[in-house]
Length: 329
Image (cartoon, rainbow, N blue to C red):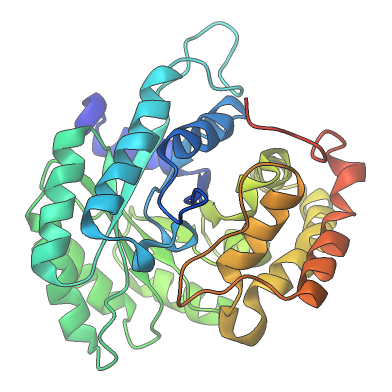
């Protein structure tokens, strides 16, 4: 693996909050590269040790091929500039560089090209987005992910799974064909389906709760040891507090954090997640981090929804008082 990671070490480093950075736009609607670097650096300074540029919260689906590569370069620049400075590093040892998991997807040729670019640029792993074809078959999912994974055997690979049709047996077959598949981002909104799939799949995989903090406690108890987060863009300490509580088996604290962020996450999930990214950017705009702009097919939130976003953030102040009024350095 890149950065001298063994597979076991990579899995260990990914067992954490995996932040999905937003992509900020300037007044002309172009990707703001300097701010992309600054926002990623803010996450790293605040203790986030794994980032996925070009994830869904990063509007992967709305970026051009060149923009996706620019975004990855920006996040890698932030990683390299802050190596050894993460907030959660032990006092007696240098922090390891933040793990970068580059999002790739679309047609196989594009995904392979982006995966190889990520490898050559210094990423540690790739996350393969769920294929966009609506007629996906489980066997086709295996073939799709296997071809991409085998094109970069020196990178860790994390498929993104959203379909119940893909069973533990399919996942096992994928791992047999592509041993560099080290885990899965599991985003089926059903804890029972997750537990069943995990029990039927090959051993040794890292299971990531891909529906963020809302599902993290339930999936953790069924064997997930990481969760993705868009909320982390706004309040890293909130997400990291949930992680610490889950690791400590302090489920009372995890439940309290869950209750405080529940309204915000419900706004993101409302209407089939129509405003998933827009809600995050609205919250970031309110504390001065970036513009609220998003690209189609996303759309900025309405004034009424913007007020709900503000209300949903209020409970965080008692948990993380420094959240409000924060600015990017």
